[in-house]
Every structure is written in structure tokens, then in C-alpha cells.
Amino acid sequence: MKATNSNYIPVITGLRGIASLLVCVFHFTHFSSENFTLFDPQSWLVQVGKMGTEGVYLFFIISGFIIPWSLSTHNYTWNKMGRFLLKRSIRIEVPYLVSILLILAVGGIFAWYNNQAFEINTSQFFSHLIYLVPFTGQDWYNPIYWTLCIEFQFYLFIALYFPIFVRPNRWSKLSLMLILLAASFIPDDRLVFQFLPYFTVGMCCFLFKKETISMRVFMLFLFVSLSIILFRDGTLHGLTAMVSCLALTFLSAELSIFDFLGKISFSLYLTHGIFGGNLLYFAGPLVSNFGSKFILLCSAILFSIGCAWIMYKVIELPALRWSKRLTMQHQDSI
Image 1: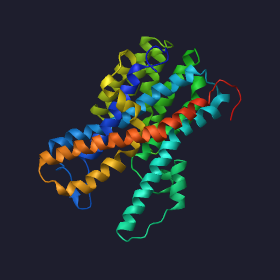
Image 2: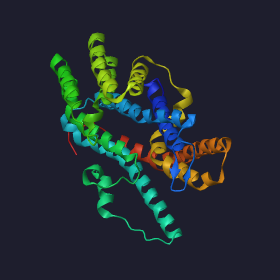
Image 3: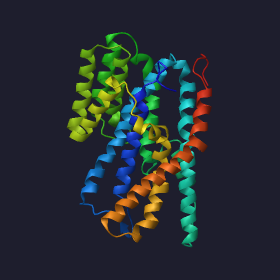
Image 4: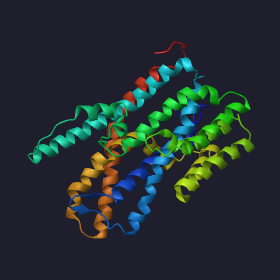
């Protein structure tokens, strides 16, 4: 699907590719195991790699834009909530579940190889499926899964709030401002409210691009959102939000160099630790100087991309197609 479709936003795919690559760079430059650290924590590469955490917040901003855009395209109302959540669950849960099974399989292989016992905690497993891990005191199988928990909460939030959010009156827009300000005082990072300023940046870009708010209101919302981000999370997060906003709002061209990564971005996000991380685990102790470690870093990224492409073709793309078969055009709910 290219720009001939009026609902296609060319820059989105490229931004997803950038976000997934940033996350890979962060995790791989900071890779360490019980007896091996890839790079000196004080090296310039590790310091630069810290910026890779911005990929997570870029994903939040993209979701804040693209989910309302999709709901608007389908004339979403509350009685379509069931279909919307089911579509998102199929789109997200199938690759997510496969990534969990891959992690468990790798864990089982490691346990067998080391003659150790291996068992699956049923409670922990099912807590993953419904994103309750942080509320049960258990650990995520993969640390990145916390972001999927926040994303899922955003889906619930926007499913409930969207019909109010798009009403053509000032009170609907004021409600977003009040929610945003109130959310900034909720310190619990297990909840979406802590990250709502990032989602709000995307939501504001959506409203402005749909021409439902004026430039003045747009700038007001951005000022409040960015002020909260800058004050609470720092300058780098604020710059990420600002650049993302400019790209979503005013950039009409494709970021072609990142489009391939954008298409496989979810698979890459889910599996780079499984594939690239294990490559570093086994090959890392065999390299000693900075040059060979840097080559190994690049190899891990390329290997992760190749495996993610297979994951995309075999798992994610079929899930995406199944999701698209469920339209939100009917008024009945699931």
C-alpha cells in the first residue's frame, strides 16, 4: 500500500523502522552476561547506544497517532469496541505469544544442555498473556514486554475515550488537557498514565493533521505535553517527542531507507534479544579488541533483522491478514 491511498501516512513505516533499530542498538551495545561484557560501560559506543532507549518512546508517540487515525478511518463508536480490541489482539498477541514460546524453548534447551531442571510457572505464563506481570510481582520473560503492557492499556484507554476525543467541541479537547495534567501526577510506571504525554503528542498530531484543531490549540497541547516530558524525563526525551511530532505532522515523504525495517519492526522488537542476544552470548567471549566486537555488534543486528524477517513472513504477516479480515464496519459488537 503506497501513498495513493489517502489514509496512508508514508512516514509512519520509516519511523517504526528507526524505533526498532534504536532499541536493538541500545540492547546490544549494553549486552552483558554472567561472565562477559561486550563493551566497556564507559566507552563512547555505549554512551551513544543509550540513546536507543528513545525507540520505545517513539513507538508510544506513533501509537498515539496511528491508532486514532485508524479508528477515525473506520468511524469508530463504542459499540465497535469489541471488534477493535479483537483486531488489535490478533495483530499483537499472535507474534507476542510466539516470541514467548521461543524464549521458553531457548530456556529449555539451555537447561537441558546444562543438566538443570526446567519448568514453566503457569501463573507467570498466563500473567504474560493478559499483561498482569507487573501487578503480580513476577518477572517478564523478556524485559521489553513491559512496553506491550503499556500499549495494551493505551488501546483500552483510546477505545473508551476516542468517541469523546473527536467530538467537535472545545470541551472534548479540554478533557484531554485535564487527563494529561492529571496523569502527570500518577507516579506508577506500571500504568499508561505515566507515559500518556508521549501518546498525547501523537494524538495531537492526529487532530491537527485531520484539521479538527487550530494551530493555536495544537501548539498549546504540544507545549503542555513537552513541558511535562522535559521536566520529568529530561531533554533527550523532549527532543525525541519534538522531532517525532514534526515528522508526523509535516513530513509527507517516505523514509525509504528504513521502510523495510518498519515492516518487520514488531517482529524485530520482539525477537532481537532471542536471536541477536544469543549470538552475542556465544560469540562474545571469542572476541577481544574493539574492532572485532564492533563487527560482532553489526553481525548481531543483521542476524536479528534476518530472523525478524522470517518471523514477519511466517507469523506476523498472517496475523496481520487475519486481523484485517475483521472489519469494524458492522454495528454489532463481538
